[in-house]
Amino acid sequence: MKYKTIILTLAATSLVASQAFAQTGNEFTQVQRDRQDSVETATHQEALVQNRKDETRMADAKLDRKETKAKAKEAQRVENEANNAARESKNALKAERKAQKSRKQANSQAEKASAARDKSNKN
Image (tube, rainbow, N blue to C red):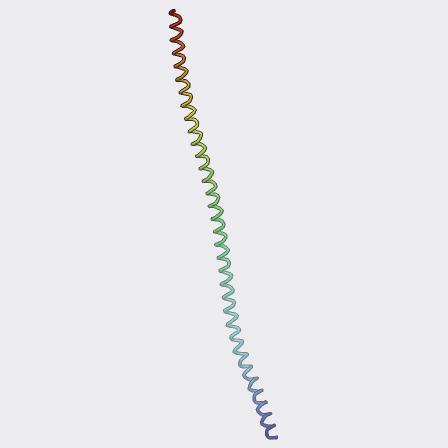
């Protein structure tokens, strides 16, 4: 009976002590939860801000890429036009040289024909 009383007393004491400790633990846990919630809220807000910054940077990078691509395309177009103009100029120069050569030959032939006519008329 004595053992039973001691065991029941110890059990009751441990039960009361555990409830008191559990309540103290809950209060401490609530403070910890509040701190944790505060930290999580701040972390979440920082993550949102970082995500917005990342999205903005990505949008800027895409815009820069698009602009660079457009500039490169325009530069390619200008280069092609310059190459075409240079080719046309080169062809025009060749055509002019050929025309001058033809005129020179025609003048030479005209002079020879005139000389032959004069010679034929003298005979």
